Length: 148
Image 1 (cartoon, rainbow, N blue to C red):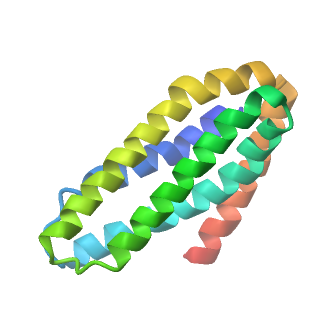
Image 2 (cartoon, rainbow, N blue to C red; image 1 turned 45 degrees about the vertical axis):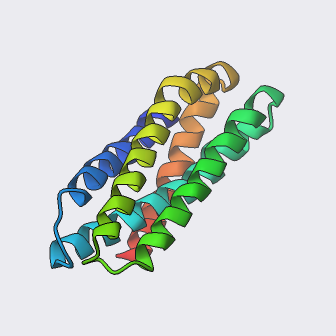
């Protein structure tokens, strides 16, 4: 498996959870559970992705700008999650913020898959792509298990 397929597995989970989140209503157990799952998925994925995809890309001059941009977007999503945590889940503004987070998640994933992956494909060798996939999945699985 190459790094791109490994990352897409989590991307699919993020898309699904963010879409489900904006379909929830009020301060329900369903909303709380989906939000907690999305929050953990975003965190685990971003940490593993930064360590095992973006930092290696930064070793090449042509990978610096895209890596910085992606990491900045991870930070923006972290701040959006924090804002949701501080907002009453039964408040109408909670859903507005959740929609903004969902939109940001979808934008970020599309940008990664349709822009960043192509550039990274030119920077990384096939051996690196395979090694990074293993390292990413290992870190992802360990962090996921720790949060379970």
